[in-house]
Length: 186
Length: 199
Image (cartoon, rainbow over all chains, first blue to last red):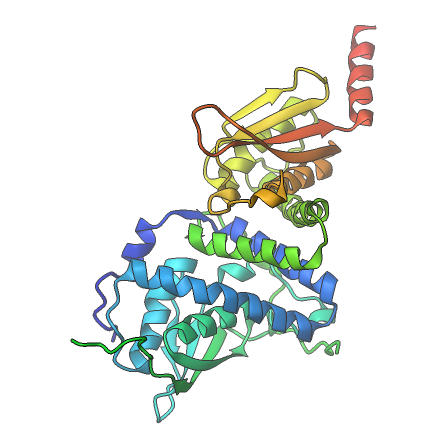
């Protein structure tokens, strides 16, 4: 059940400027290729992709909040729904679904059927340890950190490694209370 | 560590049907990604020339793939053999697919016979980029220059492609020109072909 957000993901996506997904896909491929040539170790590349994603995420959250007019999420469940339905749609043009909630409500999985990053991609045998879409985990982690949630984001299923979908596990570690620089008198 | 290959359960990527190319992502998503590309490369180089070269190399790889994709999808696998043909392919088809519009203009250089220029008022990749003064004439359009070079090289028209800012009166941001200088051997071939035709 989607929370009532003032603007749906589709509406926002229709209003933002868009570019061809293939340019996006090919540019991302060029980035991964450059990283593999420079760093050579797949673990290093995974870390670097996560770091790049983090840098994107901390800036992306501002644009997301500005354009989507979402109200403050009540709990982590709502947060995950908003990310899956509004966030992914707004930037990547695809929606994700949220499943596999644990009993405490702090850990869930975002399932992506369609992923514009991986069109035309096949992992060679020498790169089997590579999380090709690791930039996405960094983006989610960075964005959530800027709204006071410390999370751990990992890949559970990866289509490039032979699974049937992309599954990203988001685990809430800590909710850091916001600190105001001055007392809020209201 | 290099992982051992496990049994492949997915179909070969070449077996999947080719998409029509209508899927879109947000411009801001692409802009963030491109900015990370530039930022990463800035950490790997010491000077601007190298930075431009690295961006061009990244673009080259994109150009190679764009040529293959578009030749198959848009042109039914027909190969361009004439200079003007490939230039108009780049100027119209490639630009339309990648940036959503045809390039602003395609001109032949007046000073040299082998130079052509594709101009654009504001390159899509440069939309959200401002270059600090101490970086001189650095242009992130080097990425697009790389794409063009990739397309031309693999279509059989070797060339040196660079991106330049050209200030325009009455416009705050300068226009970007992609300068294409075809390799000498191509000109010799063209000239010989026309000589033989006349002879």
